[in-house]
Image (cartoon, rainbow, N blue to C red; front, side):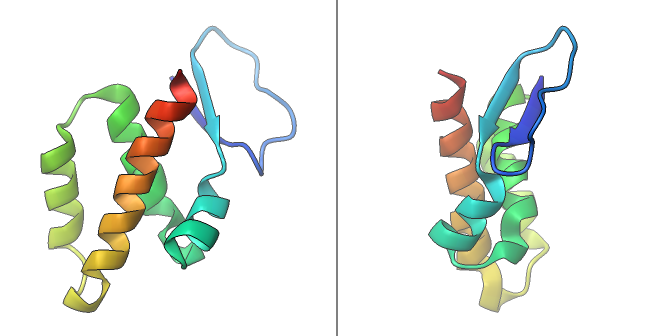
Length: 90
């Protein structure tokens, strides 16, 4: 599995793997409202694509590590990453 930001990657890497692309940074900036949560968007996407960790447990772990003032921001970022990765995979 390879997860790529469609706004950043200009040349597709070679290899025998499944590629999922969507605009991670653009999603964080324009849909969540803060570019700084792009890592959480990407994490939500990786959880969706791998299934190694449940969505509920991954989200719980993320939210346990952020200050209360940023819980909703990170929750939204994680959810959008998760949903967009699933949509992009299809």
